[in-house]
Image (spheres, rainbow, N blue to C red):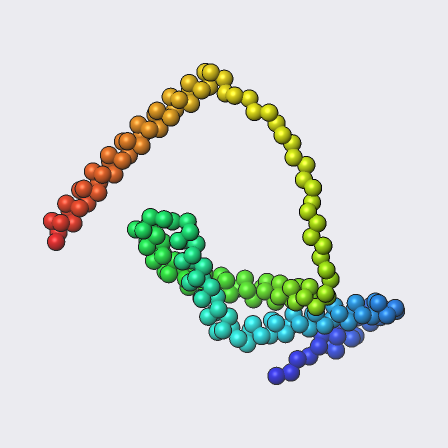
Length: 180
């Protein structure tokens, strides 16, 4: 496999661009050119190793989806259902993730690698943030009464929903028992 550098192909097109004059400009130009070469090599690698990229994305999806579901959903039945849905949606994720990966990752990886080889020290200075403190005013009495009534109404609705849920589960259990 041969890699043709872009400047070899576009010499006639870029004749209007003047070459860098100073040593610093030449170094920056060479650095930008080499980083562009890295990006092209990464794109070539991703295209030639597409099966490997798919396997990596599958592994990341498996681990990430299970961890996210475990973190967000604590009810076991709902947790299991969501894991089944996550397994069924894996082909859709693979297609979307592969397209995103091909489009964005060569540039992201190139930028990251460039920061690794520039050896610039970043100074982590905490930024001062202006915080405005406002004095809290207690709710007026009529508003407090409205909130109290609202809480009572919500509690009553919760009782109704709990009762309906218990009845629905009992009917489902009786139906399942009769079918067996």
